[in-house]
Amino acid sequence: MKLRLHGDSLRLRLSQGEMAQLADTGRVEETLTFAPGQTLSYSLETGPALAAAFDGQRISIMVPAAAAEHWMESNEAGIEGASGPVKVLVEKDFRCLHSGEEDANAFPNPMAEDS
Image (cartoon, rainbow, N blue to C red; front, side, top):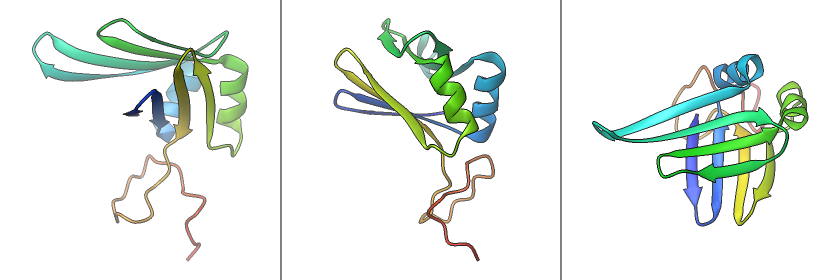
């Protein structure tokens, strides 16, 4: 799962495997370790409403279960909303068109030309 922060916005991008985990368990989590005892975790889970929280070591994002289920079963790219001043965007991680980098677990990019 990729995390991007910019101003008062937060974006999460999920691979196909992470999307399957979210569908199966209702939760996906990653941890970034800076040094022993210094970590930042971030998670996405399904729940009753959109919410974003930060407790000093963990960023927690919750999306409504019905919206997440619809998103996972459709061709829609993402779910967006706001939690207080924080804009939240959760997206499928599409393959990059320009880097030449292959990520077999990313979603096929809808902008890619069929060859």
